Structures are given as structure tokens and as C-alpha cells.
Length: 281
Image 1 (cartoon, rainbow, N blue to C red):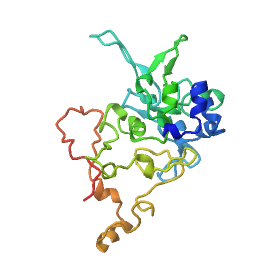
Image 2 (image 1 turned 90 degrees about the horizontal axis):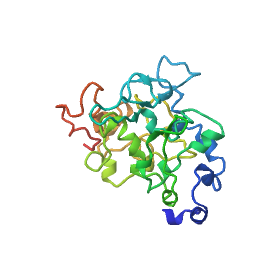
Image 3 (image 1 turned 60 degrees about the vertical axis):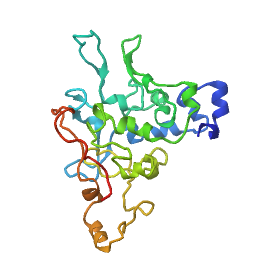
Image 4 (image 1 turned 90 degrees about the vertical axis):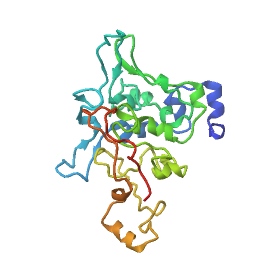
């Protein structure tokens, strides 16, 4: 994919300077991205009862105990030093926000536009070891990014890895929080060689999603199994089964269980984690 990218020669000659390099060919994209759910972590929600339709909701304004204690979701915090190693580290949900933590969730303006980590989603050769928080010379917590020319020369559509680094491994590992693993053993789509953006087709960084009860925020566009580009309203050869789709969600039969664990249950507990699959009957 990198060889076909029109900006390859410019990047090879001038290096990669972050979003300003992307803006040379994609003017206005960074400003638009600041209005996406991936940046804002919030939106107006019209499918949950009891919410103010004029307000925005999402991870931006929730208290969450899964990753980093009783904090606002997106905060990064420094955990106490280990008594064994004497070392500490930063942890928290903001490790998945595509910014630098100085320009945080929902921020706007030139600094925010310059803080976007375009390559974490669009590079097939991103060094994820660079994406870790550290303290700068002012003592501020900064999220590192791989802005190397090497990574920029591997630009393409998001791969499964680009998506799943956050969406699959959130909370500490596969199955811990989101409750699924996207591989050929556990997902019928992966078994067919599909990637996330085959169904979640994106325009202007507005990503269509389903109605996940855990993720209220959305970009205002939806994806459904019934879309004609996917399975349609008559996905089964048996007409009797097709009658079910008018009232029963596909997930009821095809995703009967998920591996979501309570924060109080250790991932190494005795729960059978091998049967949590997105499957065909």
C-alpha cells in the first residue's frame, strides 16, 4: 500500500512532521477529525432512555473503575512504585486516545490538530513501543507517538492490528474488557479474511457502528448485518429463520456469549474462556 501512496516521494524527501505532512494532500482533515468520536469520546445519544438529548455522553464524562481506579475515564495517572522493582508507570484509558495527552479528549485548536496521531491508525509499520506515556521536561504527562519516516512510508487503510490494539486489548488484554477476540478461531468474519473496515466503511473519519450498550458515543452513522452490502434482510436459506430477523437481533444467536469479566474477577479465574466466539451456527 505504501508504494501506491501519492505522498511517498514527498515523505521520503522531507520526512514526516506529523499531521502537517498529511495536510499537504488532505487539507482540513485534522480539523474535521477533532469532531469525530475517536477524538471526542462523546456524542449526543438518541437511543438510551433518560439522557438529555442536548448533551453529549461517552467515555469523556464517565467515571470508570476498569483500567485505572475511580477516575475520569480518560485521565492517565502514575501508579505507585513496585516494591520489587522500585519502578512506576502511567496507566489509564487515554492510552487509546489518538492524541498526545496534552491535547486531550475533546480539545480543539491548532495544538490539538498537531497532536493527532494519524499513523497509529494508518501505518502498517507503526512501532507501538513508542506509544507509551512519559513525563516531559515540564513534568507534564505526554503520550509518545511513532512519527518516524519509516512508519509514514507504510501508510494505508487501517488493518486489523491497527484497530484491535485498542478495540480488542482494552483493559489489559484480549477478552478482558470488550469480550471478544478477532481471529479465525473466534470470529466468522476473520475466518473469511475480512478486516474491520470492510464493514465499518468510513467517510471523513466518521465510522459507522452498531448499538453497543457499552459504547453510547457514535459518529451518527450506523452499520447493520441487514445492510445490503453485508447479509441483507434474508440472510438464511431457510425462510423460517429469516422471519426471525424482524424481531430478533442477529447477535442473539450468532454471539451467544462474550468474555467480559468483572473488574473484580481475575482473568486467570476458572471461567471457561474458550467458548466466547462470534460464530456461524
